[in-house]
Length: 377
Image 1 (tube, helix red, strand yellow):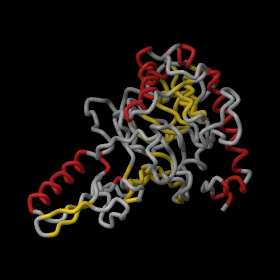
Image 2 (cartoon, one colour; image 1 turned 180 degrees about the vertical axis):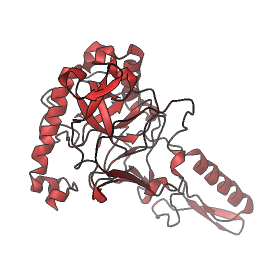
Image 3 (cartoon, helix red, strand yellow; image 1 turned 90 degrees about the vertical axis):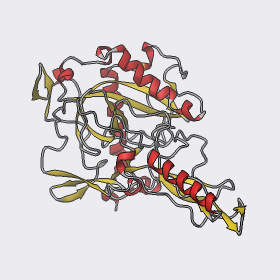
Image 4 (cartoon, one colour; image 1 turned 30 degrees about the vertical axis):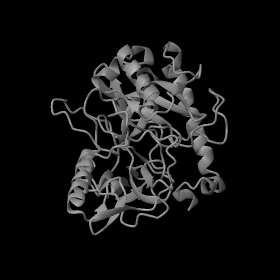
């Protein structure tokens, strides 16, 4: 979400670092590259140009001269790292689970620019035509779910099934998201604008989480919107202006970034971030055998729930910010009261679905919020 200090959405604006939980270190390959360049340049007494996070100095003879802070660093740029630097390491021992595709018809997920995380994009096609992860996948799944170990036709007995767009894979540190402002709303890395000491913009780089790898697969439920202009009916605090976030607690492997699949809703956690409501829907892959056992947040193991809470509470602490706070007490204290059950979460999701439906009927508001939506083109 735009204000969540760990999962900011949308194309980034120049960063003031006040609510940034990005790691201050670049990915390992970039750190090695910049350090090597620095040592080599200093040893040679030549010009020093740091492209992975530092600025440049100039040399005249045997002397070096620091760049004047007010002067823009013309040679500073992001040294592209491959996608794998941000996506963690796969566990070959984890058995690949089946997934129920969110779109039963002909669709394709195309991943572009895998060699450069900054330019990477996961794009959706439906029946051979470009489609939107946000606008062209329904909120609710009406195909199948898991019951008694078998995939069955959806009914009220199996719990609420929603479609889920995975943005950040379990074990990854990169901060990817559905980009609301770009045509067809691809999944891309959020960007951080790096500035010098005088505030001059130097270059952009991908954002990543300082706290560490995501302990679950993280993404969003399509055709929802946490209304940023009206108070949330539960919290009384405005929404964060994004599709509602969700996380999959399945223990098995996850599909590729952007591969939409069906999840079973178990509950929700109400993060209040920068005075905005930022719900985190807890779900499980509908094809996971455990989905037959989990029907509500109360069925989820306590250590799993505590891990979810701790992640969102402590993520901002990793960069020196205050811990996250949660509805209803607006504190960082953990207890059973922070969780919404499955029935309550159904209402929360429905509210964001209704808010989305009203949003896309108001093209003036869509334009004012700078969202990309073909229906208002």
